[in-house]
Image (cartoon, rainbow, N blue to C red; front, side, top):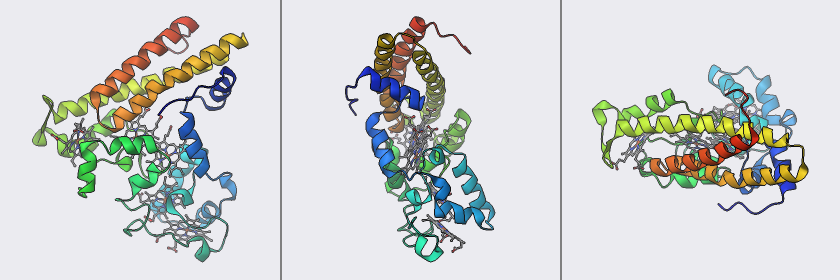
Length: 272
Ligand code: HEC
Ligand code: HEC
Ligand code: HEC
Ligand code: HEC
Ligand code: HEC
């Protein structure tokens, strides 16, 4: 995805509004789908008022604490249905249990549902050998939900990666991949994931520092430069979701270089 040129003023506004920088095209795609003001969302209001089963209660809680709820992505965005009515029967028009093969939340349809808003990740995942497994309906094949949960939009830690990959890449089932065992590939993935975490924090810190630059021209220039650097983040996300470890490593290296320069210039040392 190409990041279109933008003025420093716009870049500053984006930094101020969002903390971690998002690619603009993706952002637009997301806001187009997102429903605003979930406080008046009949799906949420009625469900919150129900005596819920344990699993549904957990689901609702995960949603409430998620980046999705904060961004106004709500029940109907994944489940369908009609949000213009409080009448249960009408609201549920088109809503199917996730066990139904036609439901957008059914295991085999879910990546596509997530992919409506997260096209970069969805397209990248389709490049990996795992997607072929998914298409052959191998239940354990890793997909969006494996790493992010169904609604929580959480990010997997290193331990989680081990747990979810070892069924196929564990000591008993180690297949070879470009000279490394499957287990080594998973361990490398864990290291890359940890670097990604650290970079996310650095990037947020740098964008805060930039907003503190007094001189408007300097501030705009720096914001522009950080915006440019966001393409390495995108590359990293893309390579990671395609399971292309060496590309992932390279993109993170580029990002580390650029953010390192920023930190040198800005002299930001808070917290590290
Ligand atoms: C007036 C109350 C009410 C509204 C409005 C409502 N729901 Fe529900 N919903 C329920 C109740 C009660 C259940 C559980 C009983 C049932 O299966 O019908 C339920 C069940 C569900 C289920 C599980 C269905 C299944 O077959 O297992 C989903 C998914 C769902 N609702 C999504 C939504 C979405 C999305 C919206 C908004 C478009 C919505 N609901 C609006 C009350 C409501
Ligand atoms: C990001 C997508 C997403 C959002 C947003 C979302 N859900 Fe779900 N929901 C799922 C998935 C996927 C499942 C299937 C079970 C699972 O993986 O946990 C599910 C399962 C359910 C179920 C259990 C019945 C079934 O079909 O399996 C209910 C009830 C439900 N959701 C209601 C809601 C309500 C109410 C909201 C809004 C507060 C909501 N969901 C928001 C993705 C979502
Ligand atoms: C209707 C659009 C939409 C759908 C469908 C959707 N998401 Fe999201 N997702 C968003 C938005 C908007 C955000 C918030 C972006 C931000 O934080 O700037 C987000 C954030 C995320 C994040 C990042 C969380 C963070 O802390 O930065 C993950 C991971 C994620 N979604 C995974 C999923 C998965 C998995 C599914 C399918 C089960 C899904 N999304 C379905 C719109 C959507
Ligand atoms: C092998 C685990 C894995 C799978 C499978 C996976 N992701 Fe991710 N995803 C990650 C990791 C790791 C990150 C980076 C987390 C971080 O920044 O700390 C991430 C980040 C994201 C983000 C945030 C992107 C950003 O710019 O910060 C979104 C959105 C997302 N994934 C959506 C998806 C969707 C949609 C799918 C399915 C098509 C999917 N992911 C499949 C592991 C996975
Ligand atoms: C259902 C079994 C299964 C699970 C679970 C699984 N993998 Fe794989 N993985 C495979 C297969 C099969 C291949 C292709 C191997 C080959 O061609 O030699 C593969 C290939 C890979 C590759 C090489 C890149 C590629 O696309 O060929 C990496 C890296 C990898 N897996 C990492 C992971 C990680 C990390 C997880 C956990 C999120 C995971 N795998 C979970 C079966 C699995």
